[in-house]
Image 1 (cartoon, rainbow, N blue to C red):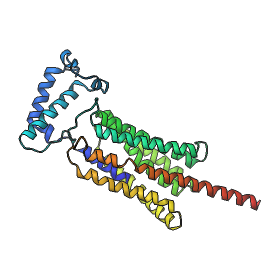
Image 2 (image 1 turned 180 degrees about the horizontal axis):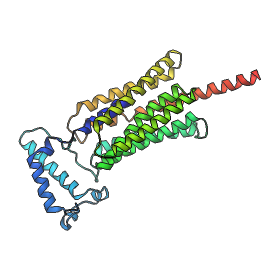
Image 3 (image 1 turned 30 degrees about the vertical axis):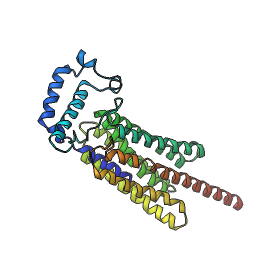
Length: 323
């Protein structure tokens, strides 16, 4: 389920201090590196600037970032030489950057998720132009929100700083909320006033929540709770509705159920939390495992829109006969 995926994403980032960044060796190295290479404004001193590669410059690696990175790997080497396990730093495993990308595997997997959403969105555009019904318009908005979220996930894993972390959190929550809204709108689409109130209330709450997150250090516990509440509600609505529809004869609803269950199964990778193996840790593999799942969901959406379209045409024919 998407809400559980986002929940454990929050948990994985919650740890602010780890064995690596707490070690005296790391902190001494960091202090010496900053004194030797950085100005008080966190700018590179001339000799240090000449050593930075072009990709890190493009990715906006600051002098302090470079010191943290270099001291991290010196500390990892020190731990391994003494027979200790690979340590985490600020809640994350150490990764070798590639072309300025801080977490190459997670970045790649996030980009693949973005690409799949974009590809399926093209299918929706071809079959259901935006100038049709309100529910079709919503699915266009849904796909755009999801693509935006995965774009920021890609950016965040490319370079972690306060702003990219905030955007990753805010946009990840937007996916959870959109899935909840999608469930409400689809199940109660004939009750337009209820759907409109639910949509407006949810959007207002999301805006206020994002404003609160940006007022200071991210409140991880509260953000996690919000994800859980919206995620549980949305998932329960979807599963109950899909089960009823499947029993009534709509066999295409299996995709919605499979999507939900497969998302939960993919989450088990995040629970393993092992050090990177060939650059892939559990978090990166979890992102990779979610890549094919949007295909299931969007295929269901397309089938459902065709179902609604067919019912609408039947009702129109019936009205004409009665007239």
